[in-house]
Amino acid sequence: METKILTETISRLMTSPKGILAIDESIPTCNKRFEKIGVVSSEENRRAYRELLVTAPNIEKYISGYILFDETMRQKTLDGKSFVSVLQEKNIDIGIKVDMGTKDFPPHIGDKITDGLVGLVERLQEYKEMGATFAKWRAIYNISNETPSESCMEANAEIFAEYAYECQSAGIVPIVEPEILIDGDHTIEQCFKITTKNLDIIFKKLLEKNIFIPGIILKTSMVISGKEAEVQSKADDVAKMTIKCLTEHVPKEIGGIVFLSGGQGDDEATENLNEMHKYEPLPWPLTFSYGRAIQNKALLSWAKNPSDISASQELLLAAAKINSLARTGEYSKLK
Ligand code: 13P
Image 1 (cartoon, rainbow, N blue to C red):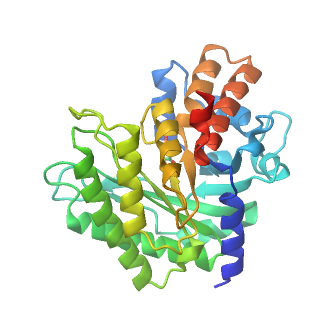
Image 2: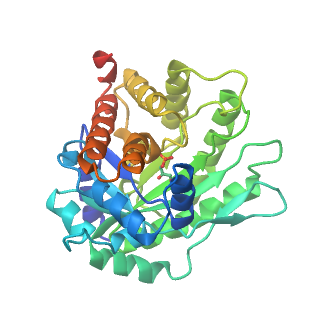
């Protein structure tokens, strides 16, 4: 395994004050998001929306890498340039979602396991030839009385290790993304307990498989109360408990840690990230890899007025900028 290529990719991705933009929604997820705002999820509409995300002027000031979906990886702008080449010209790294979604993991209702190891080696090879330098694999965990079960966490961790091994062998940085879902009425303490246990299980499996830890990025959910919890956690609690969880349960030599926004409000995701930097110095670089928290306003504007691409791109840029400020703890200075 060539470790240099992995650490070089990570140092570009984690360059301060940038973060990663996730635009890797699968077709079913895109269908849901578009349906909510009254847009038909046709291939052309998905292409047109992604074109505005990819071509947004100056986005490279705040974004070091874009995570794409298979369809987007193969799409072009209206004037015939591949999305990949547009991003590469801005020195933005190309990431690709390589898992194939989740399926039930009986007997516990709500436990899910992530699919996609079959054919992974070939897919990685093809994506690498197309320009990908990093990949992403997401597992999800529901908090309820019975879930996530230990067997589900173990099974997903084993799959993460297999995925990470194949990525690193191909010279592609694996993003390992365990997402504790925000749905439900669980407390922040319950979220802390599950997140720490899950991270312990994941890193044990990664180490058993001899994964090169400085050559991976952890993409995690924050430690936060459920959306329907009676007591909603505040930014200082989210920051304190997330940093405690990560400093105590993630190896110090990891390449970097990034957050998903996971259905938090846009401002909430920015404020929570900003608050984390009060705990610096941290052992690893820490930034965002948001999807919705950066795209929401741009998507809505495009849905209302698809011909005004610049208005939508300005909203995208503004969201990327405030999260870039939050990445160094400077967001509050603006308020
Ligand atoms: P959100 O920030 O919308 O959660 O998306 C990030 C992501 O990549 C989910 O897998």
